[in-house]
Length: 157
View (tube, rainbow, N blue to C red):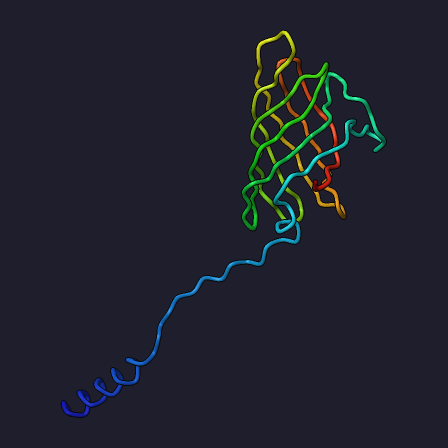
């Protein structure tokens, strides 16, 4: 009996010696929006009003939005952000976002430079959706002159 058990264990060892037990993790396929985002995206000089038609920037909105997306994974992006707001104020900072289904939830932080005033911080949050060859950006946030809110459509440039 001892010999039968030893033979069985030896046979099992020989059979499994050639097997390769390897653990593999599967990575979910990226969303259709993810591979398209790297690069520079810029908007027109004027944003869109609530009806979707061009609107001049006001104290509460910005124009000339530009994203330079320099880093990207299957579900996140990061890069730099610029915009022009009330009276020629320039917003410059960093932006990042997380992709949930087909919507990119994003945020941007940085400083606003206003002629003859000291720099002031800004913070924006919003959503972005790919619409054909453009990205629709809805945003809201604040800076030293009060709230900001608007919609832009950016094209890859």
